[in-house]
Image (cartoon, rainbow, N blue to C red; front, top):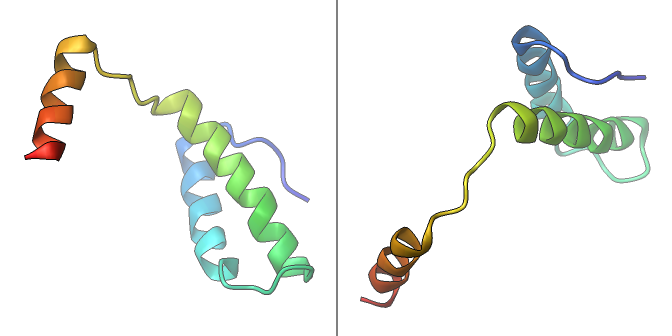
Amino acid sequence: MHKAIETEEEFDQALKRFNEVFDAPAGTPEGDEANVLADLIGAYDDEHYPIELPDSVQAERIRGEMTS
């Protein structure tokens, strides 16, 4: 079916295909493909675009902004 995403071009192609099959019903081939693509896209995204956790000062600032 699909293999691990290794390049930015493959990532872009996977996103494009995911957008095409996103609304497919569960249990259909397209729905199964959407699930596989979501996992592959997520793995690539986590590896290449990690989101760093805030340090304690940033966390306190964010918490203050959220409660204001």
